[in-house]
Amino acid sequence: MVSTIILTLIAIGFLLIVIEDIIHVNKAKTTLFFGTLCWILLFIFPLHGQSPEQVQELLNENILEIASLWLFLMAAMTFVAYLNSKGFIENIVHRVMPTSISERKLMFLVGVFAFLFSSVSDNVTATLISLAVVMSLKLPPKKLIKYATLIVFGVNSGGVSLITGDVTTLMIFLDGKVTIANLLLLIAPAFISVMLLAAMLSIGMKGDVIFSKSGKKRIEKTDITIAVIFVSTVISILALSVIYSVPPLLTFLCGLSIMFLVAQFLMRKKDINKNIIDYVRDIEYDTLLFFVGVLLLVGALKEIGMLSKFTDLYTVMAPQYANYLMGILSAGVDNVPLTAALLKANIVMSQQDWLSFTYATGVGGSMLIIGSAAGIIAMSKVKELTFMSYLRLSLYLLVSYTVGYAGAYYMGGFV
Image (cartoon, rainbow, N blue to C red; front, side, top):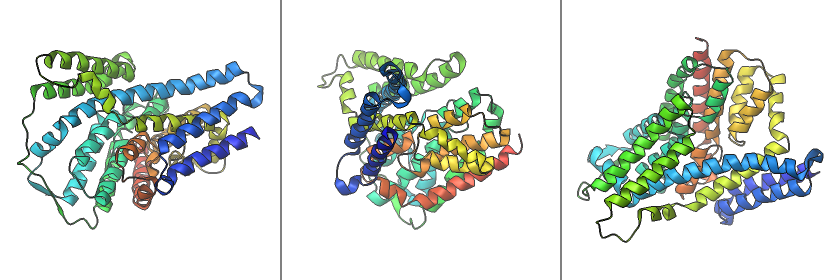
């Protein structure tokens, strides 16, 4: 009975996200309300005779995951907030880009940038930077939605072949299901699927994007220093994580503290009205609260045992088809607990199947805007990008995902 009530509340919570542009109630408020309500019910009416201490342990696990992501996102957003407020990103874009470029070429350029940047960075940072670049171009809403959609898919695709690029990829690797050499085989199909989506989204685009060179400003040395610290932090995250297993969050917070200290020293002699640490206040906390609400809802879904039921797919169909569907299902359910449930089920699959599953869970979340961290960030940052506006492009996303999955399965045959 309690499981049914919680499942109903979770469904209502996600439904309110879908119809946000109809009811005009901020999604951060609704998800946070239903997420916390579900956990309160788990304490009042514990499942399977659990004690309050056991429920507390389960909540602590979820809170740890949420806190890690929240702090990581906060650090990345602070860097971006500073560079954006100084016009640094817009200035760089205007210096690098030609006077004008066709919208079609720009679409492919954005796809390549999002894919490559997420390959050398985390999804959160790659999404924030890619969106900042596109939003600085002042594009019409309908076109901005298309570029943002490509960024979500491109970012999720770019990190799927690296153990540092996606959490589920790392989980599958650590469980011994795939090797690093196997994962490199995913680069080609993942990139092709991004280019295919760029081609489909650019259909009908015939205009040009004009870059105004007259507004070009001088780049301050302080801003360059902050940008260097930011890039160095991202590189350090990858290096320290791979070599010494240092948690990425710890490295990012260290980089943020260096930013504060260095910038404070450089700005000491300047007549400024804003302390460097004040840029933390420029973060859109709606994004962070939305994350908290969504992860609480998914955590409750996990605790009532719904995620384990997804593994039943493998008893009724072959792994290559079940993996494809699991990828699509990960658009509605967090792919991390979904992957954990499958690994715990000890399902026997070939390395080819595990490789295609890695692609599916890494990219499948792109099917819905709420299916990945990149999507949630994009929806929070781009006002025009709603659940429904993203859903209108679902056919393009499905075709690209299907082609990428087929390519991943084919490449897995070379293992």
